[in-house]
Image 1: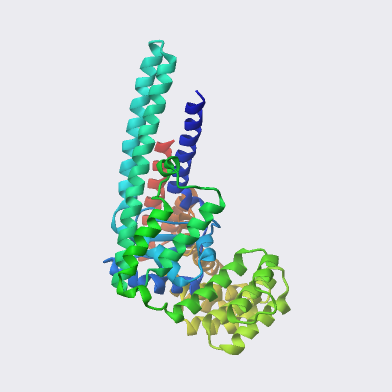
Image 2: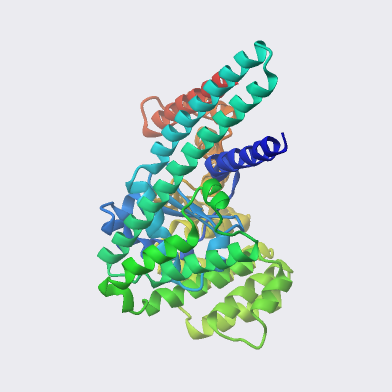
Length: 455
């Protein structure tokens, strides 16, 4: 009985972990930053092309999660946890991870994984039925044995399938790096980091650990990949110095934004005065509401690169969030222009224009925000700000349409349906905005009905 109980607990833990893997993305918040998104796009683009995909159709998304993980959940999107970015030493290491995840996308593993889990569930259900029959016949111990054996078969089948997918993605990722002319050293280095973390947490390469792992054993993966990469001409190719410099900037920016200010000051002490250190400390001081100290760090950045749109964006953001929207307008207007009207930067500029509470700025805010949502519709904050502008000038139907756009992205389907129906009733029939209100209403109704049926 003790062996069965231990297995039951372990099986439950594995199945729970599987559920978290499948559904966890929806529960996490997405981190959006213009500079980081541009960097991730440029890091991934040659790999996406090597995978036979179009960079315009593949997203690399940053998830606010401190665990060291990356995943795909269907569609053409690679999700990278913030913890993975923080743990990586180079952009090349992250490229190795992206290449692996693209292997999952091209292999259709998210879809196939669903098929495998359904097949495994079928085995578990069958074993439960057989176990129930044995229990009715009075053989309680036999019933427990049948049930646990069936669960072990189901779990083993799924885990073996998962390990096969991981090995396939490793091989595909290696081929993508090779075709893109990017060294696999980073991929190997990152796997060695993972192996060190396993040792630190007491994981060993035992037969039992191998059975319960969803991935091939890390040591085996390192040996296989290193042998593959060393034969590739790109193995000795140096990393792209511009990408690496941009990665260190974005990494420091992310650390300063997420970490506690005290931790930031330890990682980036005042004795260090390079760009990443100024970046990280600017956010740390800002989080502590030390405007003067934060501005000192930002001004140090701008002294070396006065036309850097991301440094100007940071200055405007700090001023805006410290309650000085009028002062934020100059750096944000320049940042928007220098970035080619990048939607996230433009949204912050639009927000600052509205935050001045000066009606003279509202027409410019409307223009800026319309351009932003045209280029990036999946930005709920931009839609919210646009709705504020519409409401201020008395255009309530379009204000409600903007609210519906925001609500449907935030999965507030009941609110989105009400807003879309109100917008549709007030907009001229047949216009693009009226048609869009209809589309949102239909989408919201379908989501509400689907949720009702699931219940």
